[in-house]
Every structure is written in C-alpha cells, then in structure tokens.
Amino acid sequence: MKTQKLAALGILAMFTAIPAASALTSDDIKARLEAAGYSQIREVPSGKIKTFKGTRAGKERSILVDSTGHIQEMQ
Image (cartoon, rainbow, N blue to C red; front, side, top):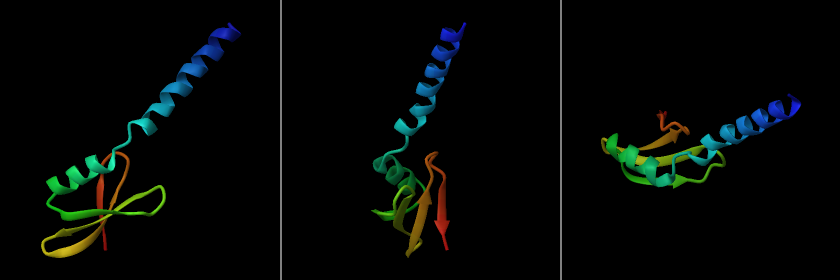
C-alpha cells in the first residue's frame, strides 16, 4: 500500500512538471502578437516574465505575455 502511494506521488510530480516544459516559446508569442496587430516585435530581457515591445496603431507599446498566451498591454 505504501509503495502504491509513493508511486502515485511520483507520477503526480512528473505531470506537474510538464506545463513548464510546454510553455510558449518566444516565436509562439511573437506569432500571437502579430495576429493581435503588433509589428516590429522584440523581446525585452526581464527575468522570468516575458516582456515585449511592439508597435500597434503607430505607437510603441510594452506588452506582457503570461505562460498561457494572455496578452496585456502596459500603460
């Protein structure tokens, strides 16, 4: 019984690590931003959070993109 519980916990630990491995790449994010109407997109190094700059409607914008692909334009 104890062995089965340990095996189940090991499998659960493996599956919780999968989302980090399947996070969006910079190319995926740039494609989403282009589809949302941004151009001249470039990534700005900022640690763990993906931050980009892009032009939309003639103005340069700062953009945050989370691991699910949600786009948030900064003011």
